[in-house]
Length: 261
Image 1 (cartoon, rainbow, N blue to C red):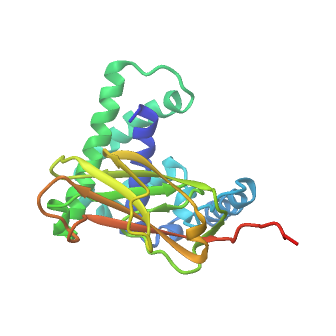
Image 2 (cartoon, rainbow, N blue to C red):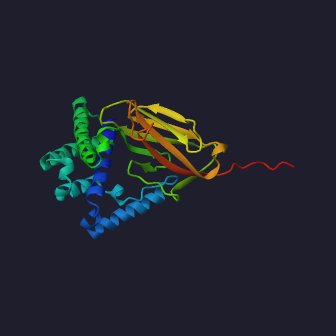
Image 3 (cartoon, rainbow, N blue to C red):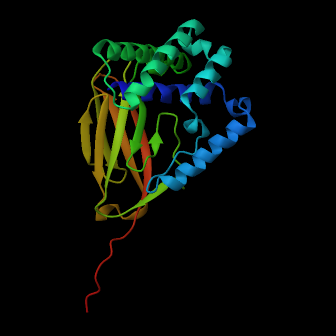
């Protein structure tokens, strides 16, 4: 990952941590701040046509708001992040790199290594904390996030509802950006298929991969479950032959055909 991706990943991890460990966080903001976040969420839906925007209010917070929520309510986060002094220092260092990475200004080699080290330590701390809650994470890889072409993101905690579907057409190509992690640093294999079709539509290897699936006439129906699978190259797996699976739902319209006399 480049420095921008590293910092973006850290911010996502911290947002998820705040949402999980401090569920009443909106009540800790001023009424003006909450209203501003709600406005940003509503505006996102109007501006970004063609995608399904996030409904989670936490996704519209500024990084400084997240950092202040963590440091201002640190007892809720100490089990996950450890020493508050380290965290405050790391926040200060990361903040110094945000603008250069966001605006494509050069980041020197030692700065890239520093960013990678800080983000890596946060990832490890959070992974260890989650492992205590879910011991299986000590043995098996997990999916950090998968995002489809429409901006919908799923992680291991996501639930897909029957109303959460996007309408697509025959011939459309849907891409999935996938990221996973393994506590034993093993090679990860990913593949995608439609639930009713046992054949793999695409396959890739790595911690970060892109999968794609082309919608065919065989997929025409109101509920198409596209499944993303991931497993390590280890002998044992969390779910039989795979380690984790995520689902995305689509509706595929029948193709328009010409009337023949």
